[in-house]
Image 1 (cartoon, rainbow, N blue to C red):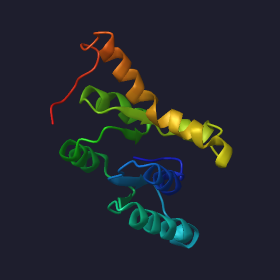
Image 2 (image 1 turned 45 degrees about the vertical axis):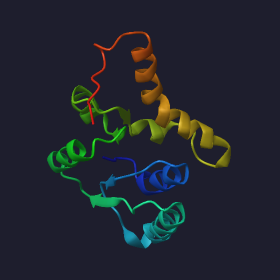
Image 3 (image 1 turned 120 degrees about the horizontal axis):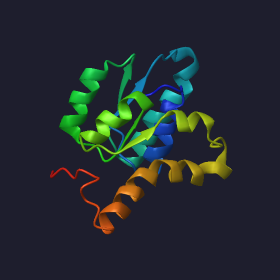
Image 4 (image 1 turned 180 degrees about the vertical axis):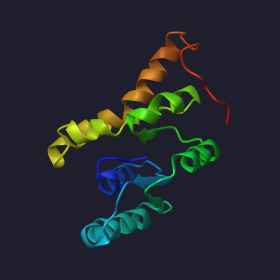
Length: 141
């Protein structure tokens, strides 16, 4: 569920880091400008032996949430409006707008991207280690 037009390049980077990306939601994709990035995404998926993510332009939020229920991802990068409902359903979220304002451009900031992505996972893991399991909903897979 995206909103900052960094979705394709961010997904490619995360796949390169070993993450499985099931779907990329993008509000608008002009293939004239995104063609090189889409090619790099395909090459990265092939190189990493991971399936090509589904790319959904102008995503229908209801259908995306249904697919999330089926896939049960460890993390959803989403807009702020959808974060709390997804968290209530047991899906860890990261606000996509944080990537817009973060200093993540260039190789020197790659660690910052990974810090942003893994922060919700680390937070919930730490809460669970403290015994605060009532604050997080752990779904059995």
